[in-house]
Image (cartoon, rainbow, N blue to C red; front, side):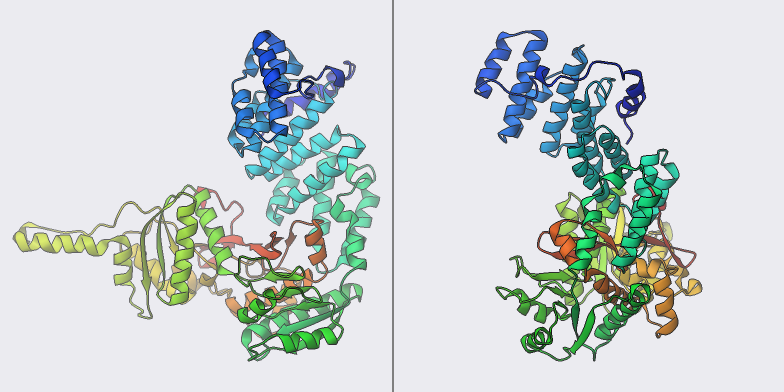
Length: 608
């Protein structure tokens, strides 16, 4: 969203350069001199015009500072900025309304308030201009308009003091980190200023090779030599400043604990070693590596203690959930540990325990968000009928109904390759046929023709299936009059192989998956495919998990200290939650002509 007021601000900077500066002494809206909110409101009732508005604003700010948000919002919403002629006072009203709305997570109200801002000079009103940009940037971020948020924050940084600039640059950087490579390319094509182009270039070189911090440090140094006049060169984001420290304090001895007699453990090791040797080629600075086999282990402690005794200052693993739960139950761990599964326990674990998993629950949540963003509200669900998949069906149901959606139909299937009965139940075709049979019993058959109809209250179908199952289910949906219904699925629908002739029956299915499978032109991916045996979807994702495990080994401290908020990984856009769990934001794709094609604008309904 681009607001006219925000655009006008920049145009007026030069025109008002000679205007007198904003005086802090004349800001009663920002400084409360009354002893209580009640006194301020009494004074406002006794006053009139602009003076009453100023006193009310002082009361609003006092209420906000005291956490009395609802009362502040009621007072702020009662003010009418359109009725105020004084530019400074009108700005104060707009800012108070936006601040109260954001405090109460009323983002649309905050946007509406900021749209009412008068045309003003940022040079004449620098304090208010900085507040305007800060509030607008926050509202744009809340709305998911990340590119607009970066533009706004960069504008705010241009008029900020040296002390304020660091915090703004950190916000710019954290917002840029949330953009994927496609979004960054779109942003680059529309960037029309030296500052914006410099930020985009810094983000690009920073994420270009996240497997190697030394390579990143060299690229940042080169950027500084090129962009000498850029604000980010003078005041780099904290994450850039801390990169050198992260490298100096990196683990020097990493231990892998994996079930190496199982395909999953082998695939993760393959991915980890592939990233390890690539990093060795780039900088020749890699940690010492020890590998321990946890196959068949029912207790993790003997293997874990052996790894610590060997000198490991970071442990990656174990993979099996029961072993992760055992670590989670400990009061403390001697070294940082990146478990490759979630303990699924609500209580926080030891301070040194991090958890990273390819959890279907994360995939389901992203799919539900995507369907909601596209405007769908009524869902139908079809999954395998085994216990684990029925649990995932319930996970989707909770996620969907929790955001206000309706689950209007659900069914499951077994190993029977004939899905006709399953789809008829899902779409209520069987009920339609049963009604027809009852009518046929009452009426002469020669006087009646019948065409079955599906239920009409389904907006989309959430499907959990593998490619073989999906190739039969999707055509069966079309046969039973549901060809127009959007179908959303999980990564399991994609085997990662290029087989357009066989996958034509999957056309139209929208799904999420790891970048590793959807962006095969990466250099490391090409090396892995050339040197290792061919692997299908699930093992490819586990290889990608191994790659990301190596990338995370030197960055867990950065996440924990808040120096970075996300990194672009092989399994997805990686972030860390407050309980030190690594979560993935997957890429969105759709089958087109039998090929999995990433979507540039996943939330667009036109992609259905």
